[in-house]
Length: 632
Image (cartoon, rainbow, N blue to C red; front, side):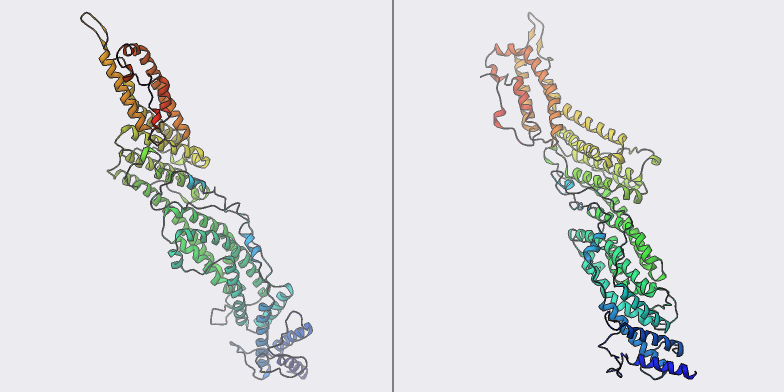
């Protein structure tokens, strides 16, 4: 080394040693400083910082460090000065990262979570292992229509440090990497930024929960956490992780980095190493929640939140790919995310299959009073209306039609009627999801037929089927999505079953009563006279009165919950009953009125019957004043 170079090296060493971080006190004067003073404090003497960086460059040029993994020591010579310089730069790097970081505005990040949502999709929290006794459609009314989770790309990279601080960090990192201290530089970066990333996720509401913690939570609590997780995951991935990746790029771009997790100093990785080292723990914690849901116990009430989780993860996958999959170091996080999404899809398919089996196997117990709509019918139809609201996702996930084993299980239940043929449309013209929905309704009908057989009164059995099939038809008609999936051909078949049940009810309930108003058996002939048998006529009126009074007493307690159907049924009964009674009364009234105590036989006027019919299907006994007489 010539004398000029030696003098230059000596000057560089003096500048460096004035800022010896390992010394117990400042070494020498001249404006130098130890641990209490920082070169890159954002408001200090920039000239001194530039002199220090130039000195480091001179040391690197004139006295390259020895090979190996250098240690922070204060040995003599150019190599020792380099180590002193690296120790100082490491402290400066840590100081700039920690003291000049910009506090993340979580409110701004939280806005990212709503960029792709019009409204929340609510839960079907009333669905359980056994259907709850729901008396109205309150379950459905509490559930909003779905809104797509598929969004426009919405990554938002936020400046985590001021530009001048990033420039200083890049200048420091470049010197450390050139001196072979890149691993130490990355370790310092990760040690400072990891807590910042963890803090951001905590403020977004991401909790540290193990898989066991998640699986022990009650569903109501877990449902809320899923909703919060979806919002937090958007903000974390598109805001926190994306901004952290950008900061890493600005600091470490074009620098030869080695992997801080590998013991050898060989340059095996790129600038992704500091980023992945920083966010890996937070990313694993974030996606660990979704993983716990994907492998948890399956039950019908979880379906819609799991679909929401699946859709949110599918929406985020392109962003996860851009942020992580571009490097070997981050690829495992992307792969894990795709695997979780696949397990969520499997969970959705499994839950749908279990739901179909639950409908099939719901046991026949006690008939519902009054032949009204069975809770199972409300449960199933509200559930599949929601399924149809998720048509976009489920059409992608459900790729096979109902299996033959489902039919075997249905036919194997001896407590229910023989299972009908399932004549579905051509598979090529029908989505598998449509086939599953139709199959579920067929299974529900089959189950309801078994429940109808529990009624001792055949008329009530038919009324029960009429009520329930009518409810099914209207649920299909009232949901454009479900109607589109089920199709008009099957809807027409359902409507026909409803009409058959209504006709069967009227025939079973009213044929005996209407037969009392026929002429057969009232005429006598032979001998010296022919005409009407007054004794037979009196018995006929008594039989009619008794039959109608029994029908009025019993059927007023039966219940048709649909107002329009109830009125149509009353009108249909009146159209058959009133003309027949009016005609019978007109033909034979004078025979009774000419005898003794006509009021014992002709107890009702046509108007009395008309008024009495309005008591039918109210689900409660008729009021006492509805017993009327035609004679005062």
